[in-house]
Length: 633
Image (cartoon, rainbow, N blue to C red; front, top):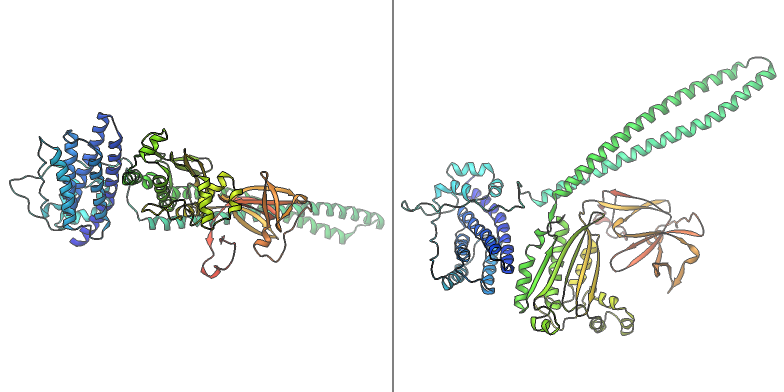
């Protein structure tokens, strides 16, 4: 490995670790701003100080001098805070958050560098903050960069075990042999190295290694293919059981016919008063045939029992393997929600609003793919809460509310392998009259239909694309797309969305989602002699309906469900099958009710059979025009 490749690998590892350190810095700064306990504040400051110190050392090791300089200046400010030489204020926290964001932006660039003027401006802000409020202690002198031939030792001393693990033993071995990452100035002989404290370890990391998410996704896909093996074994066991039933049926038939034949032989022998040689030979063959088939039946029963044992064994192993693979791609919600407190603070400050974010349940683990899909919609919802929901302090005081607004984001794990995410605020709430007027103005609904809507139905219009009650556009929201995208994303993930809003009191949105998307659970139904799977996540109920209760409303068949009319369609017709569905009883039909957050519909089927886990495959580009089918298994 040459010098440049070594440096590239080290910087890539540094980028990943520093992202976690910066997230920790941001979170701790938010905690420090809220705390009123001096002792607790000192503990938080100690963690912040160490994080900045570790970031400085790691940046120095990979020769990122800009980040090193900013981190060192930031470390000096935190040191002054520890010594209570700087009075903590909103301005101080604004500056420190700006510095953290600036470093994040540097890391996001390909060169991991910024313009000299921008870096100088940030350093000047930190220097002004330190010098303007520090009277007794001078800033700590900057330590010199490490000598080039000391690079490997400095890397080992300053980078955390996680970073060393990422770069690997090979990189360190080559560094020991003389590799020199970057360009570094020589250390003065009369100035020893500044002794660095051990890196502050993230308690959530433990003994972990970093693996590409693409590799994990491919591995999970291969693991899910084991479901096909599981289903194949189950099918083979069922076929063996059918053979056993056939033999048992044959044995019953044979026993009855054999008894009849024996009576016939006896009667025939009495009539002739002599032995019937031919019938005796036939009887002998039949007895041999009986013994032979009974032996086969016994072997098949033994084989079936063995196959059942093997099936149960492999079921347990495959299920365990799949669950372990699912857990690999599960991440704590904090990986998604960590930036939210700072974002809410900055958005609130930009609108002269004081807002606290109450975050609970961030330690609950959810499928990484779900977190990625939810990130943007949740950010939009948070922006809505800040922009449209929470009032400014003066207005809140007039409404007898606390001056500081409250936004809450709570995550709870519920039964059935699902998670419930609730996000809301204590602000304006959704005004149904304003929503009605806006919907009519935008042509989404007529004035007559709007007048007939209940309060919650009117509030639910916010989920229509293009619907917004904002009087003007802002940098934050007002375009009328976010809520529609939010609902669409939730339903795509197999979840359901509900909301509650009281005008003047606030609003809340509750999302119920599966913890994992690893496999597809479907409800097996029979229609016109064929089998189909409907997504269990959208199955609301299975009903036995009297055909006489079916009514026609606006040329559409309907039934009554939960006291309300429910549209009814034949699944055979919906799937454009040539054969109609088969009703076993003329006066009874089976109805499968499927639903999303917004609507429900009933489908007439021949029979609802069972629920099962399957390996789901999309149809592909060649079958894009096939309607109403999501895939095959």
